[in-house]
Amino acid sequence: MYGSLLAKLELNLSFLEAQSKPFKHLPQKDQGQPSDAVLPSRVYWIASVIQAAGYRVLLRYEGFENDASHDFWCNLGTVDVHPIGWCAINSKILVPPRTIHAKFTNWKGYLMKQLVGSWTLPVDFHIKMVESMKYPFCQGMRLEVIDKSQVSRTRMAVVDTVIGGRLRLLYEDGDSDDDFWCHMWSPLIHPLGWSWRVGHGIKMSERRSDMAHHPTFRNIYCDAVPYLFKKVRAVYTEGGWFEEGMKLEAIDPLNLGNICVATICKVLLDGYLMICVDGGPSTDGSDWFCYHASSHAIFPATFCQKNDIELMPPKGYESQTFNWQTYLEKTKSKAAPARLFNMDCPNHGFKVGMKLEAVDLMEPCLICVATVKRMVHRLLSIHFDGWDSEYDQWVDCESPDIYPMGWCELTGYQLQPPVATEPTTPLKAREATKKKKKQFGKKRKRIPPAKSRALRQGSKKPLLEYEPKAIGKVESEPRPGDIITVCVKEEHLDTASPSKAASLELPLPMLQSQEPRSNKLLNCNILTLFRSAAVCPPVMGVLKLPKPRTKANLFFFKMSSSGIWSQ
Image (cartoon, rainbow, N blue to C red; front, side, top):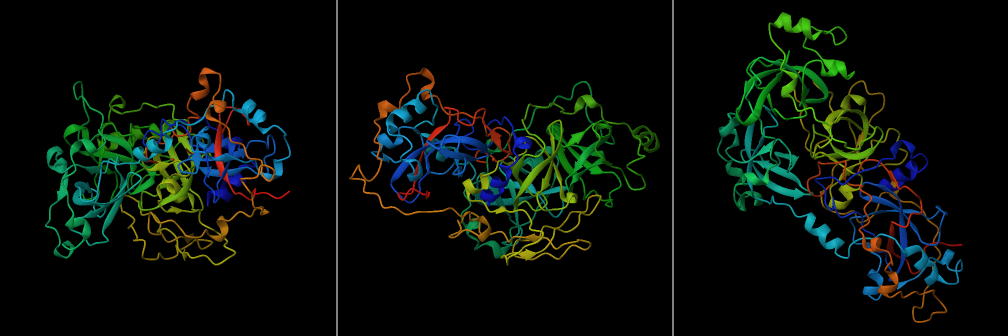
């Protein structure tokens, strides 16, 4: 899917250029980038990284120099990429593409000139990649997770599936399809006993009898131990702390595009706060939600005003005329002191216009193509491509729910493509839209993937939503829109005859640079922007390397024995 999308971005990359860094929660965050492609043949050639976009890189075979007509995209997490010297170690041959075969008479000399001083991958790159994609959570572990039907309490759940650090949880007292998706670093999950320890509400009920035969419940190993969960920042209450009744601004967890006027309803232990949106319809506390005091989803009063963000005021107030001082006097309340909020802002590297893969937190089983629409310090406004702006969501720059381009492809998770507004060919999709957001704490119901959605009233054009496929399965054939046609001319090579093919068997010593930095890892720092995808996730945007033909980005790639281009 990204093939055509990235091809379009090549026409105008200026707004996407970024100096990305490794994602802290992603695989190979410190390993740099891989390099060698396994196509259906036994010959290989060297390629350079021209640009990077998340886990995907734009590559160019050596010898084409400034000719970009045959550049191609590849996912770095595949086994198709190898470091320089891999062919020599594994007795593979190097064969230049047919179209440039006659360009140089001395290919060995040309390659030596190009490779001296170059950077490449470590020889154990793929081993480290596999190791980095191992997760501590496994099927059958029990934990506490937020109750999606009532966010003021938690429920007992069991881990059913782990994909790229994302957990599919089954509620113990629910049906077999009553699940909840989240990242293993999500603040929505906790070890057993957490609710009782901090004073949070929990729904206690016996396991349903009809779940006894579910494979996940038959294989319960143990309770997830506390060290598996992401630790929160330690807080110190000396010198003043949050108090019940204090006012602040908070992201509404049920309408994530809104920052609302809110009140601290209860102070829990370990720095946790129960918060409610002012003017909400509930009077029994069922719409309260829990944030930690160090959370980047709560802000001091006037935060929105200072940063030109629309604040959602309580019912009866207009956002244009809302005034905090007047409101505090009328409600006889006080604002939470600004010093209590965690307002640090790292140099995250995100820029407006960058592309990424983001979780739809209202339907967390879905990961969609998205764009960074706006930045306010460390706060990012995420827009889902093809959807109205009313579905935008605010997330933190280190959220475990945003990933670089190519993360879904790497982990096998189903990526939801941008909605097609005017499809020209029949697609295996359903005409549907997301239900319109309900204000003031009313949660949009999550629609199971197997059920269709109704058309949203007022929509000018029907929007399409692709039905999620079984996660982890690879499509046997590409979709029509994913295919990029290339001109292919088949030519059978006789590797035993040097006259029929330019075969270069370069010994390993010849591929080594005489400079000390030759064995350095290729490190374009492309995977630092996202902190979300847990040990194995995505960079937003396209990273343009300092020079199109720098020597710091050479790789081996396997190519078709036919020489995949015609003259």
